[in-house]
Image 1 (cartoon, rainbow, N blue to C red):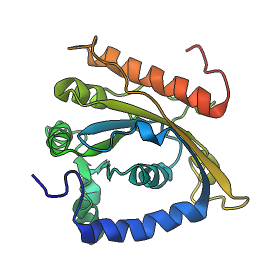
Image 2: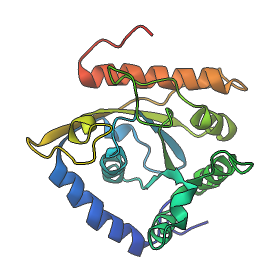
Image 3: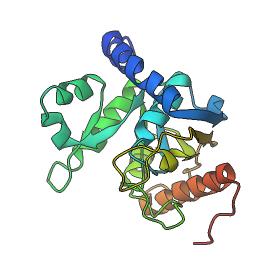
Length: 224
């Protein structure tokens, strides 16, 4: 096991922090609530709604501020890009193999990382929401299957504001006026009654995320 459980080497962590933290502080104001609910040690699964391509940077900063290193999942093809591939591998990113016989490898890798004490960030929807009201869509079962297999706690984080910085489909961020990134961390999702039922466990995860998002938005969530 690593002497830095769930984290990259000090060199690569410093490189990432020097780039991402100032960028996050520059781009948005932060309204973070209850980040003390994120366990400081041990393997944990973080689930979040997905609003913008800027989500990983903004959520990564929040997790780092809570004392955790965000282990994210990325398409396997990115690892083949010169230089970039080596960098994201050094940052402990997990490759996702889609449409192949190796599609389950990412979950096996995630199990190994949880055993090391990593905090793994999942977007259960698998993509940026296409819901007209920007509410979460139906989730994929990866995070639930991982939680049911390992017993790792599932911590939901709902956030709002990233879509104002870089809306889906746009390439240039809207820097002015400066946006506020709101996020609230929920209590662990209780999946104890869903053994062997990953689809229902996933629905429970998405229900928790939707209720949290309603709270951070100050609105009523849709009934369906």
